[in-house]
Length: 592
Image: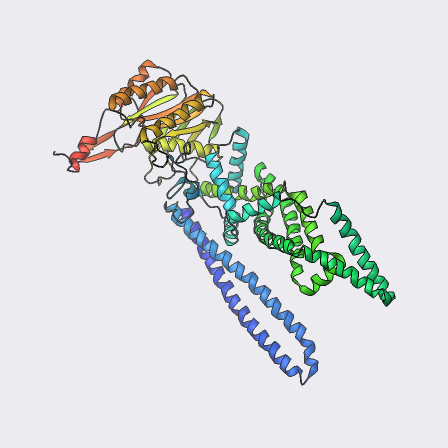
């Protein structure tokens, strides 16, 4: 850990020093621009008395614009270095488990999701915030999707593992990607409007009348221009043809202006992503998955550049003189729109995939940093059988100095574990640790364990059910509805890992006990791995009724004088100790 901190601190100092050098250079360039501008004014003034000086003005002007270009490049480099300084500072804090400055993914919060709300996947202090090093909106969407939608085949999981391993040592690429993405960040609305444009119908391309008009009109106008140069008697005919084409172009002017405004925004979005694609192209990847992304990035960068050039051509209509002659002789505006519509026709199906290349690279960089910052975490194996094995399983959101690992096995052969224990002993944290590590496994990421294996399996939980006045649901009904959904999925044949924490809390103790037993009786018949945490030690007797299917585990507490102590270690058997009365006495709620 200390070595990683030193690494990030060294990079922060290096980029800070480079940033100071660039800023000094920018100040010199700014001073140079002022001097050149003053020189231009002086030469112009003296030129009225010594006209030969006017011949030097183009060179002075060129020098000024060169300095402007140099300044713009330097300014962008300065911003990139600022981002890199910031990132390395944040990484040092993250190593101390302060990751609050990264985006939390709050927009993905969903209390009704099958497991994300119970497992704290999104929001402040969430797994998403701990993992998130995405600089783009589409990257964050991809990262969230990987947590919410487990991969469905072993090969894709192993391919992602290889990609994350490949990115482990590419710290410069990962940080450059973030720094550029943050600098050129687009929002979700821009992406949606870009994808909407792909679905719009052409208004020029593919229509016979425009195909004829765009071929015959310019041909006639150019022919008349050539004839007029030879014989000026044809001038009226030339002017008439030019006026006719100008009128046609003007008739569509407002519509083309709207297209220009929209595409100008889309161009900037794609140009931003083109920079990120260029970074991908510059890498020497070894993993199959990243090589395929790189191949897609090459196709994308070529066509994105072409799109940018086509939009620039359309935007040149803002030059009044150019557009007047261009539309009068060539119907320039209509030709420009037609070329863009052709580009859309050819590339519309591919563009979402190109955007996905950026999103995948962004999300994988997050997992690459997660792997880099946690070198002791293991890459799991994907088991074809319905079982989970873990050695030193822990929760990644608990700092390593506080984290207690547990060995854990399920489905070998027992598929249901009844976990009993006192309050605060670690039952709920253990359930969340198991769920979170399965999610990481199926996303292709390393897990917080020394060794880990799990099957490709769906995940369901019932841990943090709440009532809803808006949906007219009581707490108890909401819990029953969650259980109903779980049972429906199981009866449909879907293999599931089910995490249940103190179920049926909304009824009396006798009803709760009998209902809990009835649920376990159903679960032993179905294709599921179940972790059921409860205070009801009577459920532990189910191990005798269902040998080889139900197993007991427990977390115990210890009273050491006036202090309550926990070792947070999972042990076999049924919990023997409770602590509610002891805690109430300690807090003065009831007399000692």
